[in-house]
Length: 294
Image (cartoon, rainbow, N blue to C red; front, side):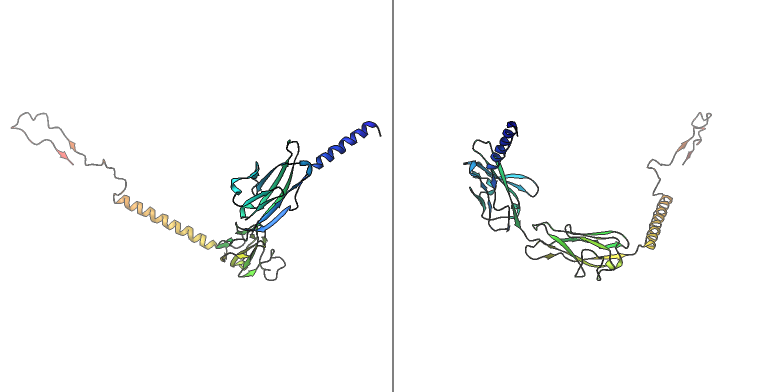
C-alpha cells in the first residue's frame, strides 16, 4: 500500500473517531406515563463536551417545535412543573399536551460540535365517549358509511362496532352471525362500510373506543333503517307537485278575472268633449250643443 493511501486511511479513521467522541445519548428513548404522573427524560453526553451548552426542545404531535430549557433556564411555559438537571429533564406533573418528542441538544463551549438525543414522551389519556355517525335511513343496495370519532384519548384509540349489542367482526365474510351482511370495519379510523347495504343490516348501532388506558367506552346507540327503492312514492310526489301548480294557476286566473291583477293605477274613465256648432253666435239661440260622454 502506498504512503498516500496509508495517510488517507489514518485521516478517515481520525475523522470518524473525532466525530464519534462527541456523543449525546439517552437511557430512556421512550417514556410512557399516565396524565398527572411524574416523568424523567434522561440525557447524557460524553466527557469530550466538557461543560457543554445544553438545550431541550419539544416537538409536538403536530410537528411544531418550542423550547423547554434554553439559556440555562426553564422557559415560562414549563416553569411551574418542570425541573432541569445536567442528566435529566424532570416533569413533576405531566399533562395530555406533553406527548411528543423531546430533543436534548449539547454543544461544546466553542460551538464546534453539537449532538442530539431524542426522547419520546407518551402521556396516556383514556378515551372519552365516542360519537357514532349513523344515518337514520338508507336505500337498499347502496353503499353506506358509518363513522366513529373520538378526540381525547392518547395513544389514539382503535374502534369496534356493535349491532343490537352484538360485537361485529372486522369483516362480515366468514361470520355465521353476520353472513347476510356485506361490510368491512377499519379499526384505525372507526369507519364501518356497507357495500351494498341490505335489509339484514337494520338495527341499532354503537361504536367503542379503546387504547389500553382505562376502560373501553361506548357511544350512544342509533337505529338505522333500510328501505326499498320506492318508485311509486316518487311518482306520487310528482303528481302532488303538479296538482299544487294547477291550483296556483287557477288562483292566478281567478284573481285576474276579478280585476285583482292586471289593472293599472292610471286606468281612469275617459271624457270626450265635442265643440258646439259654428252658428251658435248669440245667447238667445244658445242650445246645449256640447255633449259629454262618459
